[in-house]
Image 1 (cartoon, rainbow, N blue to C red):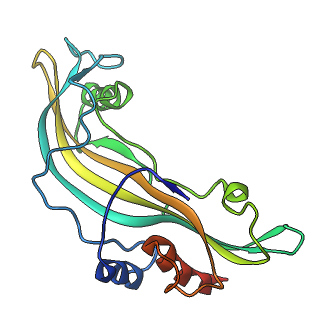
Image 2 (cartoon, rainbow, N blue to C red):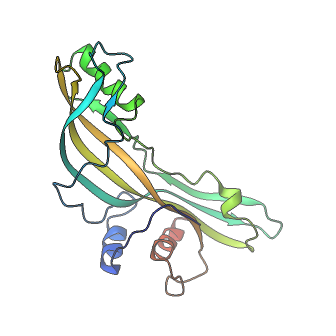
Length: 205
């Protein structure tokens, strides 16, 4: 199991997530938080015609939700061979999108901000490493899962010399946990709640 950050949620929040289904989410983060997107003061003007690069001049509120981004139910035979019983992915890409009506240069400003590290647009985690997740497991059925914090926000980008400005919507994913849970276990003995809740997806097999 891989964990990249510390976080906490209540059991009630977990239940709400499951009732909402794979695409469900826990409570959105409070608005008005400092934006996590700003990774640098300015980004170089690689595609845009901005003087002094591209800058993030205004930060909007950040909405966040903790969600499963991918789930797979796999049956493991006695000889170690595997059979995929069901597979689901959120199907949402990270990225930054310029507001409707943006000019070519403003769209280039958004691309410069992403390429230059001004905006964080990390993709949603997947369960691609199934062999690693299922290493040394016994015969049975397992659910593989990827869980992440999804953040969305609206930002304003400007040229460093103030010659242009554009609004953009940003979506990014921060991996929380990728792991596997034995479908033969009930949620109760599983100490990590993400794994415990993931067992409910074993019904897809």
